[in-house]
Image 1 (cartoon, rainbow, N blue to C red):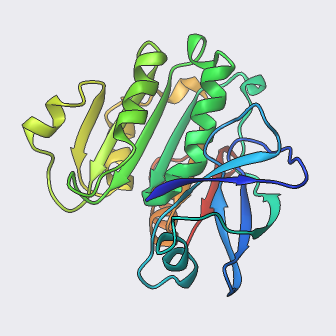
Image 2: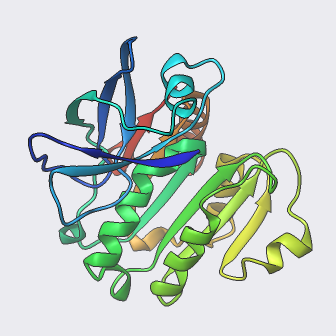
Length: 232
């Protein structure tokens, strides 16, 4: 997993939560990647890209990191967007590289003073501590929000050790699939129903489908309040 920057020939105006289709490196077809943060220069976008052993594009990219590459970018795309002007808290759920677009939402919320008015939550699903990533950045976001952003990281493969958890005091850790952890939080009252939050869900299709089903059928969240993106 790594962050990449693309210098655009034509500036692009995009909203937090959107993505672009990227093609090139002699590989047929385009791949979708979300912008991760707001930057002052509209002719640059930053993307989070995961090396997929079965993915020809990401493999070719990671195997040749010594030089820059010319790519084609199409976008922005996606409706799972957020603006501080909405004046509502949010509950974001990201699985794996689906966290990328949510990072842009966090960045926008921080820049717009969202957390001084609305306490919000992030649930981040990963496999285990050994393969985790971006925890330093997320921990820093919690600190910058003055703890008005609450983050729970859910490890699906194994429980978090006390030693690892101690190294990230700003983050809560749980064991299980992220949608199960969110269900438990909502049923316990940790997510008050009267706060009228916006729900964001992003990740692999199986994670997004399970989370959507849980929110709608079990937690009685209106589908109109859920914004989501599925990434294969």
